[in-house]
Amino acid sequence: MRRIVGATFLSLDGVMQGPGGPSEDTTGGFRLSGWLPPVGDDAIDRKIGEIFGRPFDLLLGRRTYEIFAAYWPYASDQMADIRDPFNVCTKYVVTHRDRPLDWQNSERIGAIEDLREIKQGDGPDIVIQGSSTLYPQLLDAGLLDELTLMISPVVLGQGKRLFGDGTPPRTLKMTEHYVSDGGNIVATYQPAGPVEIGTYVTEQPSEREKARQAEMAEGSW
Image (cartoon, rainbow, N blue to C red; front, side, top):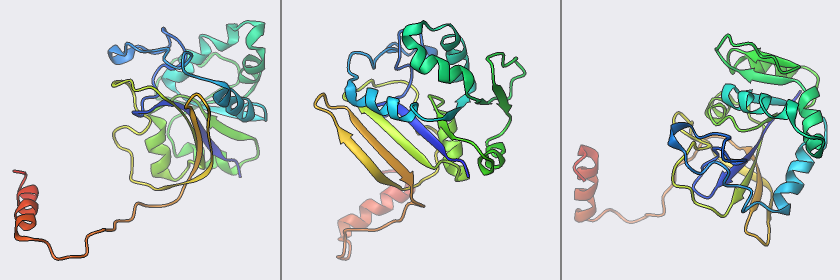
């Protein structure tokens, strides 16, 4: 069975939009596209080399696909280590649009559930790049096998989040982590089931706490 693995650049406040350059993704009035190069370091470079140094296919949302298709086929030989594998791998694109997918080896995926059958086949890992809208759907469908977060020491305050609206509650188990001297955190997780509820409170609530809870329940707190 194939695995679906995510590899995401992330700010401390969970923003993943437009890390690579000023023109990458300014949708929604995002003013900080290109935030990663000044803070990235060798820890991130090594992880990217590991992920893309073995056979892979790509899983992309429509907007990330358009960003990649407008850049990677035309990238210089200086970027050949990523350009060439990106060009020859299969690109699975989750989109409802009829716009042609003219980057070589691109395949349209109409629904997340279509990936279940693809996972059952033979082939390399399917790596998600960008594509924030895919993560809630993949978690909900139980199709995400692994997630590597490359978290940089920067707070952006706005932008597309990794886990946005519609994300189901889940726990994750850390399987690997590294913190660089520059403060970048590279951490890998695997989904580990539903969120369980517990409490540190063992005493009976005070009358004041009972009143607070009642206000909270009625929406006046």
